[in-house]
Length: 308
Image (cartoon, rainbow, N blue to C red; front, side):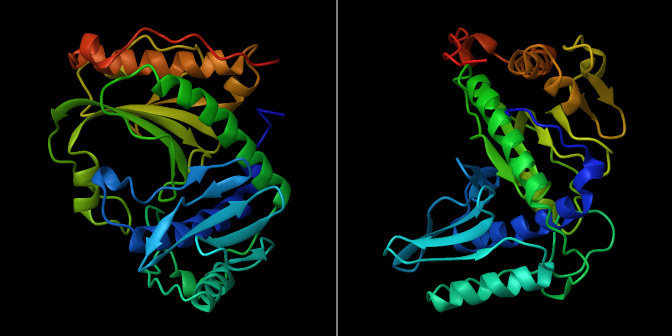
């Protein structure tokens, strides 16, 4: 099923644990990769089985880490042909951190990381001390991955219509969200920062240029999973723009538009409903901020064949 149900209440403890596990893996990539603009060297990528780092160079070898949400394992593979893995099951963040570190060390891959969770509000424990978050519901993790796969399909089609600078469709482990971002090409005012346990300069660099960004967020703190869209800086009139579909609304506290996942999942054509949200929020941002849309866009491409 492409658009499975996943109420936040069904898997919130697993969500909290998996959020931190992805941060451990993501921080390995962060520590090993050269810095790329807007932190594009740090995300994970949706795969046919889960989420993966992509190829990471390390000294004279290269490796990849991959979450498999089909067989529920974390895999290490190297370009030298070595491989190792361990089962994803209920275990503490501290235990996951230790198992991953041991697996990397056994293959000569020493990548020290800062063991502090980022972008998670409230008091948090370092990875190597967190014995509290230890849930893993394999079915819920699998359904979350299915949502990422379906969302990735639509985000990829949306991204293809833009010929200006655009991010890949990628999974940011900081906020545990799948995102795609378009850029006008103009610089933006300095971002105020303020993300928990995240240096302000990181956010300033991420938002150094005007953006229209959208993504999928599993809903911690909101109460339900949702798609989001925002503009930085937000142009005058953006929050009162005519956005589709009807279930979309502007969340004043968050400063962004939200479209509940349930509204997409239950729509007659979920792909079309989500694409409508992405397109109308982008058009509102681009038109109100006077982007050069003629130079940045190309005509909509025909949808690839897909069975229903």
